[in-house]
Picture 1 (cartoon, helix red, strand yellow):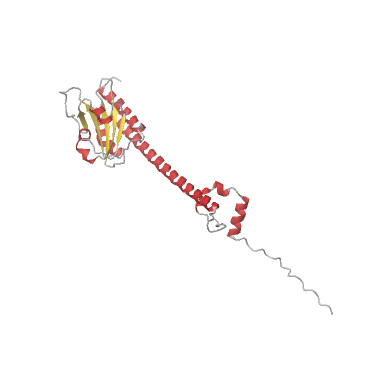
Picture 2 (cartoon, rainbow, N blue to C red):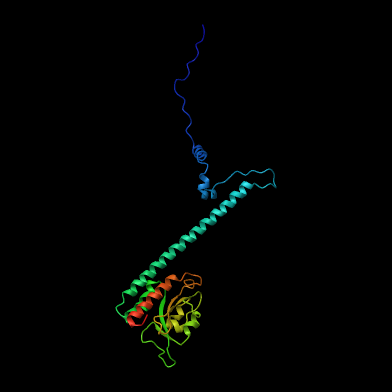
Length: 243
């Protein structure tokens, strides 16, 4: 009696579920430009080492390592630019607040009070003063208002340099002629030339900080220049000076 062949298993065979590695492999195969578009992944990928002897270097590893270093440097530069952008935005906001505060002045004395008493907090510095050169050898040596100092003739050019609009000093002590009793706190300063009127003596808007790195040569001065020009216009208006 012949033996009947066994019936095959009628149940359909189930293929093995793809692993995570299979999924990643299939994705990269379908998207060959993915790593080029995402170079930061090169920092964490590890390629197999291939060499033909003890003294033969794997150029693939060298190239990947170099790319990793370049990506890391680009990341650090991006972080630096982002931090600088945020700092510039904060500085711009403070200058706008200072300008609005000065525009709220109800008179000349109130303007001086705002500049020398309120602006230090608004601008996040330790002291703000105003200085003006004496017009004659026998002129007054002490201003009638706090935070305002009278300098000898020619002092503005001596302090800033002839024709200099904004002078920044880092890691330097404050001058008592400019900052008065607060000079001992000052470790960096910004001196901004004031020329309220063609016939008026030269003056200074002086900002001092106990942070030696707050003001440094090479920093942008556009915002300080804007604040000084606004102050000049307000002094002209309140003192009825010719423009």
